[in-house]
Length: 276
View (cartoon, helix red, strand yellow):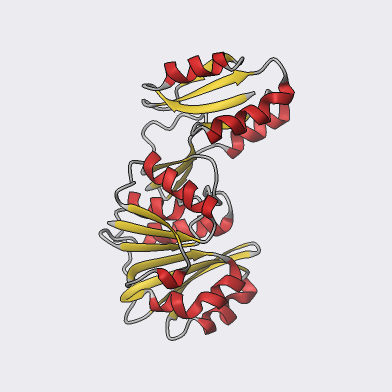
Protein backbone atom coordinates (compact mmCIF):
# COMPACT_ATOMS: atom_id res chain seq x y z
CA UNK A 1 0.00 0.00 0.00
CA UNK A 2 1.04 3.62 -0.54
CA UNK A 3 0.17 6.66 1.58
CA UNK A 4 0.04 9.96 -0.30
CA UNK A 5 -0.20 13.18 1.71
CA UNK A 6 -1.97 16.05 0.00
CA UNK A 7 -4.45 18.82 0.74
CA UNK A 8 -8.21 19.07 0.45
CA UNK A 9 -7.83 21.38 -2.54
CA UNK A 10 -5.45 19.03 -4.38
CA UNK A 11 -7.08 15.73 -3.40
CA UNK A 12 -9.29 15.27 -6.47
CA UNK A 13 -6.41 15.82 -8.87
CA UNK A 14 -4.10 13.50 -6.93
CA UNK A 15 -6.71 10.72 -6.87
CA UNK A 16 -7.28 11.14 -10.60
CA UNK A 17 -3.55 10.81 -11.23
CA UNK A 18 -3.29 7.72 -9.03
CA UNK A 19 -6.13 6.00 -10.82
CA UNK A 20 -4.55 6.81 -14.18
CA UNK A 21 -1.42 5.03 -12.94
CA UNK A 22 -3.44 1.91 -12.14
CA UNK A 23 -3.78 2.46 -8.41
CA UNK A 24 -6.97 2.01 -6.40
CA UNK A 25 -7.73 4.63 -3.77
CA UNK A 26 -8.93 2.56 -0.83
CA UNK A 27 -9.50 5.28 1.74
CA UNK A 28 -8.92 8.98 2.33
CA UNK A 29 -8.02 9.99 5.88
CA UNK A 30 -8.55 13.56 7.11
CA UNK A 31 -6.15 14.04 10.05
CA UNK A 32 -6.62 17.82 10.09
CA UNK A 33 -8.84 20.47 8.54
CA UNK A 34 -6.54 20.79 5.51
CA UNK A 35 -4.41 17.62 5.36
CA UNK A 36 -5.63 14.57 3.45
CA UNK A 37 -3.89 11.19 3.24
CA UNK A 38 -4.91 8.91 0.37
CA UNK A 39 -4.32 5.21 1.02
CA UNK A 40 -3.64 3.47 -2.27
CA UNK A 41 -3.35 -0.15 -3.32
CA UNK A 42 -1.62 -1.47 -6.43
CA UNK A 43 -2.64 -4.65 -8.32
CA UNK A 44 0.97 -5.84 -8.09
CA UNK A 45 2.45 -5.22 -4.63
CA UNK A 46 5.94 -5.52 -6.10
CA UNK A 47 5.37 -2.19 -7.84
CA UNK A 48 4.53 -0.28 -4.66
CA UNK A 49 8.05 0.97 -3.85
CA UNK A 50 8.70 1.96 -7.45
CA UNK A 51 5.47 3.90 -7.73
CA UNK A 52 6.06 5.66 -4.41
CA UNK A 53 9.53 6.71 -5.58
CA UNK A 54 8.14 7.90 -8.90
CA UNK A 55 5.44 9.95 -7.18
CA UNK A 56 8.05 11.56 -4.91
CA UNK A 57 10.15 12.42 -7.97
CA UNK A 58 7.08 14.23 -9.31
CA UNK A 59 6.79 16.25 -6.12
CA UNK A 60 4.17 14.25 -4.24
CA UNK A 61 4.57 13.20 -0.60
CA UNK A 62 4.23 9.45 -1.13
CA UNK A 63 5.63 6.60 0.96
CA UNK A 64 5.16 2.84 1.17
CA UNK A 65 2.81 1.83 3.99
CA UNK A 66 2.23 -1.62 5.54
CA UNK A 67 -1.15 -3.19 4.88
CA UNK A 68 -1.69 -4.61 8.36
CA UNK A 69 -0.42 -6.70 11.22
CA UNK A 70 2.54 -5.85 13.44
CA UNK A 71 4.18 -3.82 10.67
CA UNK A 72 1.16 -1.50 10.47
CA UNK A 73 1.05 -1.15 14.26
CA UNK A 74 4.69 -0.07 14.23
CA UNK A 75 4.02 2.31 11.32
CA UNK A 76 1.24 3.97 13.27
CA UNK A 77 3.44 4.26 16.34
CA UNK A 78 6.34 5.69 14.34
CA UNK A 79 4.11 8.26 12.62
CA UNK A 80 2.45 9.52 15.79
CA UNK A 81 2.88 13.30 16.31
CA UNK A 82 5.39 14.27 19.00
CA UNK A 83 4.65 17.32 21.13
CA UNK A 84 7.43 19.02 23.10
CA UNK A 85 6.38 20.72 26.34
CA UNK A 86 2.97 21.54 24.90
CA UNK A 87 4.48 24.18 22.60
CA UNK A 88 5.69 22.59 19.37
CA UNK A 89 4.67 19.38 17.58
CA UNK A 90 6.51 17.43 14.88
CA UNK A 91 4.60 15.12 12.55
CA UNK A 92 5.14 13.42 9.21
CA UNK A 93 2.73 14.77 6.60
CA UNK A 94 1.39 11.27 5.82
CA UNK A 95 0.58 10.47 9.45
CA UNK A 96 -2.99 9.25 9.82
CA UNK A 97 -3.21 10.46 13.43
CA UNK A 98 -5.50 13.38 14.17
CA UNK A 99 -3.54 16.58 14.73
CA UNK A 100 -6.24 19.20 15.08
CA UNK A 101 -5.37 21.61 17.83
CA UNK A 102 -1.81 20.41 18.37
CA UNK A 103 0.55 23.18 19.44
CA UNK A 104 3.05 24.65 16.97
CA UNK A 105 2.61 21.97 14.32
CA UNK A 106 5.57 21.25 12.04
CA UNK A 107 4.80 18.81 9.21
CA UNK A 108 7.63 17.02 7.40
CA UNK A 109 7.70 15.46 3.95
CA UNK A 110 10.15 12.89 2.59
CA UNK A 111 13.92 13.20 2.83
CA UNK A 112 16.47 14.61 5.22
CA UNK A 113 17.43 13.35 8.67
CA UNK A 114 15.37 14.39 11.66
CA UNK A 115 11.72 13.91 12.59
CA UNK A 116 11.95 14.45 16.34
CA UNK A 117 12.19 10.77 17.26
CA UNK A 118 15.93 10.33 17.52
CA UNK A 119 17.26 11.47 20.93
CA UNK A 120 19.75 13.87 19.35
CA UNK A 121 16.99 15.71 17.48
CA UNK A 122 14.63 15.64 20.45
CA UNK A 123 17.26 17.05 22.82
CA UNK A 124 17.94 20.07 20.64
CA UNK A 125 14.23 20.70 20.12
CA UNK A 126 13.87 20.66 23.91
CA UNK A 127 16.63 23.26 24.16
CA UNK A 128 14.87 25.41 21.58
CA UNK A 129 11.64 25.14 23.60
CA UNK A 130 13.48 26.31 26.72
CA UNK A 131 15.58 29.05 25.16
CA UNK A 132 13.83 30.68 22.18
CA UNK A 133 12.27 33.85 23.53
CA UNK A 134 11.15 35.33 20.19
CA UNK A 135 12.72 37.32 17.40
CA UNK A 136 15.96 35.35 17.17
CA UNK A 137 18.07 34.79 14.08
CA UNK A 138 18.93 31.08 14.06
CA UNK A 139 21.56 29.07 12.20
CA UNK A 140 20.95 25.32 11.69
CA UNK A 141 24.23 23.62 10.72
CA UNK A 142 23.79 20.25 9.04
CA UNK A 143 20.08 20.95 8.71
CA UNK A 144 18.89 17.58 7.38
CA UNK A 145 15.11 17.79 7.07
CA UNK A 146 15.09 21.34 8.46
CA UNK A 147 13.14 20.24 11.52
CA UNK A 148 15.22 22.20 14.04
CA UNK A 149 14.90 25.46 12.13
CA UNK A 150 11.18 24.96 11.61
CA UNK A 151 10.66 24.28 15.31
CA UNK A 152 12.59 27.45 16.11
CA UNK A 153 10.27 29.43 13.83
CA UNK A 154 7.16 27.90 15.41
CA UNK A 155 8.55 28.92 18.80
CA UNK A 156 8.91 32.54 17.71
CA UNK A 157 12.30 32.89 16.02
CA UNK A 158 12.29 35.55 13.31
CA UNK A 159 14.42 33.83 10.68
CA UNK A 160 16.51 30.72 10.06
CA UNK A 161 19.46 29.97 7.83
CA UNK A 162 19.62 26.20 7.30
CA UNK A 163 22.90 24.98 5.82
CA UNK A 164 24.10 21.55 4.72
CA UNK A 165 26.66 20.08 2.31
CA UNK A 166 24.23 17.33 1.24
CA UNK A 167 22.10 18.50 -1.73
CA UNK A 168 19.29 16.10 -0.81
CA UNK A 169 19.12 17.53 2.70
CA UNK A 170 18.99 21.12 1.43
CA UNK A 171 16.26 20.19 -1.03
CA UNK A 172 14.26 18.47 1.71
CA UNK A 173 14.69 21.41 4.10
CA UNK A 174 13.51 23.85 1.44
CA UNK A 175 10.48 21.71 0.64
CA UNK A 176 9.59 21.43 4.31
CA UNK A 177 9.92 25.18 4.77
CA UNK A 178 7.42 25.73 1.97
CA UNK A 179 5.18 22.95 3.28
CA UNK A 180 4.94 24.81 6.59
CA UNK A 181 4.43 28.23 5.04
CA UNK A 182 7.90 29.33 6.15
CA UNK A 183 9.63 29.65 2.80
CA UNK A 184 10.12 33.38 3.31
CA UNK A 185 11.67 32.98 6.78
CA UNK A 186 13.87 29.92 6.36
CA UNK A 187 16.66 29.95 3.80
CA UNK A 188 18.08 26.51 2.95
CA UNK A 189 21.60 26.81 1.55
CA UNK A 190 23.92 24.24 0.00
CA UNK A 191 27.20 25.58 1.33
CA UNK A 192 30.02 24.94 3.80
CA UNK A 193 29.73 26.74 7.11
CA UNK A 194 32.64 28.98 6.10
CA UNK A 195 30.39 30.60 3.48
CA UNK A 196 27.83 31.74 6.05
CA UNK A 197 28.37 35.32 7.18
CA UNK A 198 27.30 37.14 10.29
CA UNK A 199 26.45 36.16 13.85
CA UNK A 200 23.33 34.43 15.14
CA UNK A 201 21.35 34.51 18.36
CA UNK A 202 21.18 30.72 18.34
CA UNK A 203 23.27 28.14 16.50
CA UNK A 204 22.24 24.48 16.48
CA UNK A 205 24.41 21.70 15.09
CA UNK A 206 23.31 18.07 15.34
CA UNK A 207 26.31 16.78 13.44
CA UNK A 208 28.30 14.34 15.65
CA UNK A 209 31.65 14.70 17.38
CA UNK A 210 34.03 14.61 14.39
CA UNK A 211 32.17 17.34 12.51
CA UNK A 212 31.79 19.49 15.64
CA UNK A 213 35.53 19.32 16.28
CA UNK A 214 36.35 20.09 12.64
CA UNK A 215 33.99 23.06 12.53
CA UNK A 216 34.56 24.28 16.09
CA UNK A 217 36.22 27.65 15.28
CA UNK A 218 33.54 28.48 12.71
CA UNK A 219 30.70 27.41 15.02
CA UNK A 220 32.05 29.63 17.80
CA UNK A 221 32.48 32.55 15.40
CA UNK A 222 28.82 32.37 14.32
CA UNK A 223 27.47 32.85 17.86
CA UNK A 224 26.59 36.45 18.73
CA UNK A 225 27.97 37.89 22.01
CA UNK A 226 24.66 37.25 23.78
CA UNK A 227 23.85 34.10 21.81
CA UNK A 228 24.13 30.37 22.45
CA UNK A 229 25.24 27.22 20.67
CA UNK A 230 23.74 23.71 20.98
CA UNK A 231 25.72 20.77 19.63
CA UNK A 232 24.35 17.24 19.47
CA UNK A 233 25.09 13.80 18.17
CA UNK A 234 27.73 13.11 20.82
CA UNK A 235 27.94 10.64 23.69
CA UNK A 236 27.87 11.72 27.35
CA UNK A 237 31.50 10.63 27.69
CA UNK A 238 32.52 13.04 24.91
CA UNK A 239 30.91 16.16 26.37
CA UNK A 240 33.88 17.55 28.29
CA UNK A 241 36.25 16.96 25.39
CA UNK A 242 33.88 18.58 22.88
CA UNK A 243 33.38 21.58 25.18
CA UNK A 244 37.16 22.05 25.20
CA UNK A 245 37.17 22.53 21.44
CA UNK A 246 34.48 25.21 21.67
CA UNK A 247 36.30 27.67 23.92
CA UNK A 248 35.93 30.52 24.74
CA UNK A 249 32.25 29.55 24.86
CA UNK A 250 31.41 27.91 28.17
CA UNK A 251 28.92 25.19 29.00
CA UNK A 252 25.56 26.44 30.30
CA UNK A 253 23.48 23.31 29.83
CA UNK A 254 23.64 19.61 29.09
CA UNK A 255 21.09 16.93 28.24
CA UNK A 256 21.72 13.21 28.12
CA UNK A 257 19.55 10.25 27.23
CA UNK A 258 21.13 6.81 27.05
CA UNK A 259 24.11 6.97 24.71
CA UNK A 260 23.34 10.46 23.36
CA UNK A 261 23.99 13.93 24.73
CA UNK A 262 23.60 17.58 23.77
CA UNK A 263 25.75 20.46 25.02
CA UNK A 264 24.68 24.10 25.23
CA UNK A 265 27.39 26.74 25.38
CA UNK A 266 27.37 30.53 25.47
CA UNK A 267 29.65 33.53 25.62
CA UNK A 268 29.14 37.04 26.88
CA UNK A 269 26.41 36.12 29.33
CA UNK A 270 23.85 33.39 29.77
CA UNK A 271 21.45 32.50 26.92
CA UNK A 272 17.93 33.78 27.07
CA UNK A 273 15.50 31.41 28.71
CA UNK A 274 11.84 31.33 27.81
CA UNK A 275 9.86 32.71 30.75
CA UNK A 276 7.80 30.28 32.84
